[in-house]
Length: 153
Image (cartoon, rainbow, N blue to C red; front, side, top):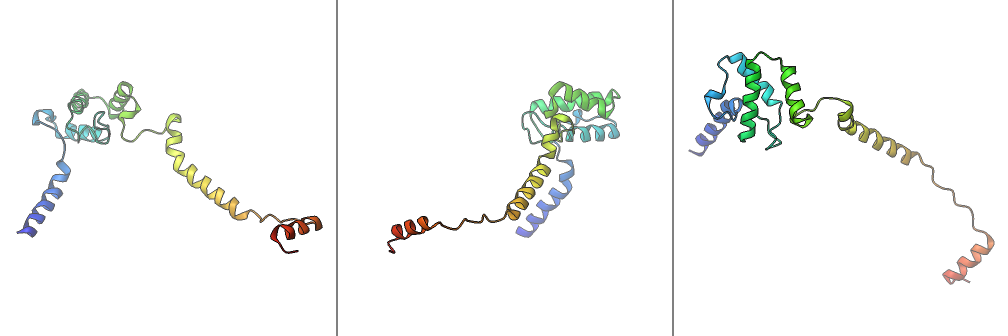
C-alpha cells in the first residue's frame, strides 16, 4: 500500500508539475491557447512582489493575480513580449524580473563571480610566488644578547 501511495504521489507530481500554476479560476485564462501559453511564459519571468522568490504564475498572492491579469490583458491587446516586459519594468522596476537584464547597473552583479574567481586566483598565484624573506645574519652584539637572554653563557 505504501509503494502504491508513493507511486501515485510521484505520478501526480510528474503530471501536475507542468500545470502547477496558481491561476485561481479558469476565467483568468485566455481563450486562445497560444496567447495563454505566451502569457504563462511571460508570467514565469516576472517576480511576485509579495512572495519574491516565486513567479507571478506560481504565486497565489492577490497582487500576483492582478499582475497575471495585466499580462493577459496586454497579450490579448496584441502587445509584444518586449513591450509587456518593458511596461512591467517601467512600472515596478528591474526587481520585477526574475532574471535581470544585463546593463551597466547590473554589470557588477553579473560579473562578480568571475571577478571573485580571477581575484582569488591572482592572490593565490602571488602568494605562492612570493620568495621567502632572507634574514640578515646576527651581529656579534645580537649573538651575545641572545645568549644572555637564553641563559647560555
